[in-house]
Length: 243
Image 1 (tube, one colour):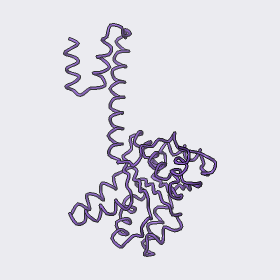
Image 2 (cartoon, helix red, strand yellow):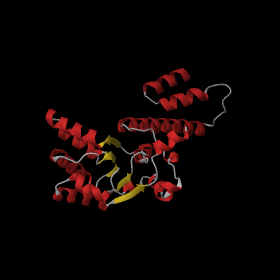
Image 3 (cartoon, helix red, strand yellow):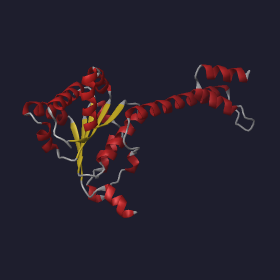
Image 4 (tube, one colour):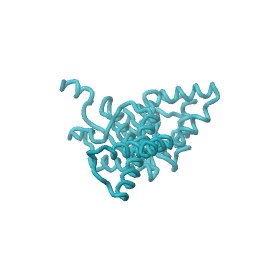
């Protein structure tokens, strides 16, 4: 009977329940009451599905780093507000459809922090996508040529959190400027965006170019944004010096 039950669980794809029930049959295992066994099996299935969902979301995000909030360095030289950053781990800013702008010099740890917040969002069930900004614009230009541009733009719009890393390394040309405007316009008031950049926010106007569009983009981006400005020397240099 148990073998048949296990087989049915497998066919119904109740993998968490299958493993839990299989484990509960071993002779040395504790004896459950009926209520406890049902609760244990349901909880095991719930946990299994949650873990698989997080795995799926994390894989789909294409993060550059495997980063965690707990590993963020709060060394005094970095001038980080620990309370502010730990509040981001609740991802309330996503619920409130607010943006996050992370600035700091090369190697300061902007990408790591953006990725850590992104991983945290995945673990809470949010849909996240991570992009190097230049690579995203290259991909969008290609998609205009092959006719998949609207599909790509719609996919970006649907993400609960979009992370644009290394923004501002190159000034935007006319095509990229309009794509950027479209992305920000689509997401404004609906979803959250994290932008990480070596340049201070004040310099973004020039990078975007064309005053009217730059004004429109920054108005939508900065208005509902939290800002983190990371100070201190390069984390990459620091790590290298410590080895």
